[in-house]
Picture 1 (cartoon, helix red, strand yellow):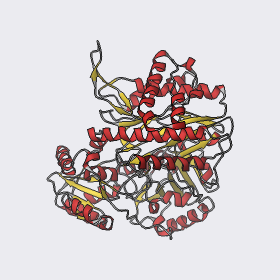
Picture 2: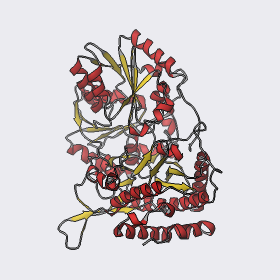
Picture 3: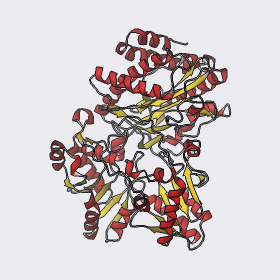
Picture 4: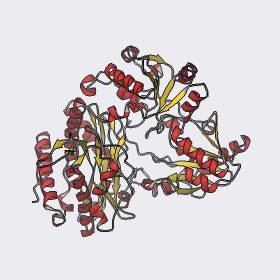
Length: 609
């Protein structure tokens, strides 16, 4: 399931589908309905049959919400998608709202009248989301009404069936810890939460906990399902057995009671009626689960998913795997950039570069006996003005040639069994302008600032986000996305809870992998983003220092384009870092390439200072 370039777009269908939803609202005594992009697991990538927002609106981004009323309809997106939403959605049907500046709770409070009844699917909203929505509705005298069956599922006549990709055991060599040991740790953590059970709704947590991987959603090796972990060790796993080969089923049977997904609700009801105290993560667990517990006499313990921090803090095997995956990926990127440099302006296009990169990654994987399993997300291949669309996804309709004098933004990643990668480089096609070079260097200064940072225990992502923006801010520039997201170990390329952003409240702990990706975007002209993955290193005492300090180790290995660099804008410390980084790239990647690629790499990593 690698990248496709289909042009499926529902712009012309939006009006008819919204009309069908309005008929359903009238028949069921509701004034409106909320359609989030999420599924029952609140993941970034969802199965085709869970793309309800896309089916209704045409919008294919990873974050968004629609609210449909009898006379009006609205779609909420964040800053990443302000351009994309205009291309994909019928603006004669939907009005665009900001998911950040005017999120649905604020919109409800300011726009709904007394007595309005707004429906929602409690499986698609977390307990935290519903709490905020209900509080807003209460202020205006409106009512939030949970529906038994999602109307989109009733209207969507050719809705795809749930996926049944085979589930495989993730080898201990890459996992670094046996599943039974992880389960024992989590059982202890559940007890410390004063709970008897915890429901795992995030398939990444289930994959990590049970050392399994699947293929139910694009780009991330997840097997969709739920788990109910018990402090006493009587664990239950709810997963369709049709996805379990004989070996995997026998393995999982030793760890948990295997049950069909349809049995989850009755299991929760039984536990609640027995007086169980069930831990639910307020930012992950569906509100339907809360209702099942509370309506049947159980107690809800609002607490974080107990697997999230253990999963995010990589162990020695996972760190070694990440380093190996990035060396392999670095060799593929070097071959790709060398190939790209040899193409005359105007002779290749966005789709061709994506296809070529996948081809090279496959070949390197075969050479190193670690096959490319998947791309870790849909490659962002943006030429000229398309590069200014932060989460641009090329299609046959939008495909552009790489034109002379333009910048080309290439943001891609790979899934290998030993690690997940994510890298962005911005490449000039022909001669870049001085403005392009200046702003590229300002973005690079932000990346280097994060790379050089030392910070004490307890530092959060929000505490360091500004470091990546300082050089841009001094020139009156900025970017409308976070600086870094967490990354999993052969799991989600966008892993929580760690992130470097204004909203990054999680402490940065040893072993967490994050991206480091400042950028600059000039709408209608070009985009610049530079991205390395980094890992939080152990806290060490600095010479003459009073406090032990964490730092970052850079995992990604690929040069920055020397044609784009303004050495006069870099400080001595920044130049020293850049030359040392390039020397490391040549040292680690050089032995993995030869011929023209090696010559290209030697030139691209030549010292500046």
